[in-house]
Length: 150
Image 1 (cartoon, rainbow, N blue to C red):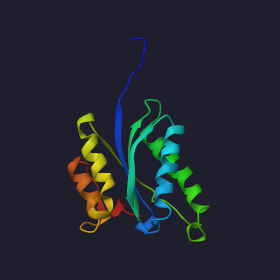
Image 2: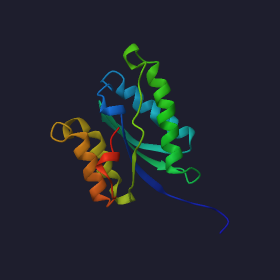
Image 3: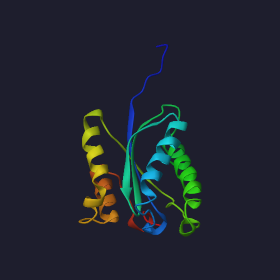
Image 4: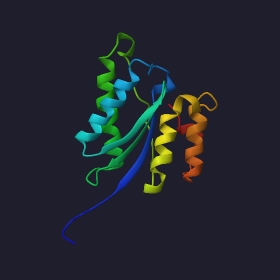
């Protein structure tokens, strides 16, 4: 085969350090656009980005030329630098150390997009921690509660 082709859809979730609710309404839409640009720079096209005051969901077509850990590292690093310049109260901003990355089939894209767009409503009923635990269970990812949060 002379050409390498891939369709890698991934749903990435990461939180602010200690789940501090600092991603307020004025900065969030700008952050989503910034993250989309950071993904583009890594040859990984955003499908949907959203979240709440304490975390982010990214659904993207991940480049076949980058590992998931490197993709997340880069978008977190670049967006953290950008956020620190947006407001005085964000000068000490940090993302949590870890992240979740979950594979999505093409048939799951529309449902995942809707899920990401409805984060505000969703989190009126369910905490980020409970949401994240549900993903870990759904995807059968073993975890130790002592090491999931920072």
